[in-house]
Image (cartoon, rainbow, N blue to C red; front, side, top):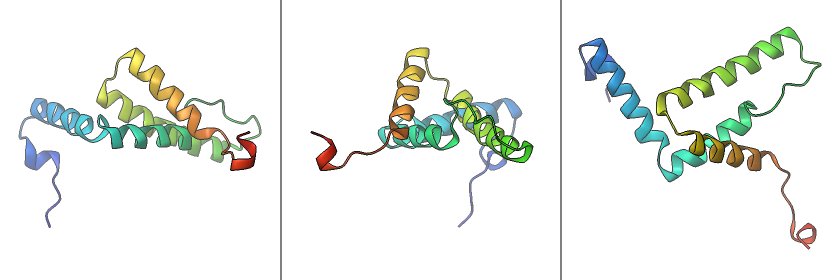
Length: 104
């Protein structure tokens, strides 16, 4: 199998920018992609303050995770309302799960 890449899809830089944005949007702006974005947002902690006791290495690692998530968000260009809904979905992913006895 030959993996697709931008250089094979588009020759000109302007065409590549349009092609990559279209690809990100097709992957993340569907029900499954929205679920993945909420999970990634929760996993990378982009909507949470970093713990104060992080070492410089841990802080850099966390910043890298957040930067990658921010890259995805910049590529899909969602509205502020959609971003607020995504933030809420990511927040819900971080809540502890409740068992049947705790739902009462």
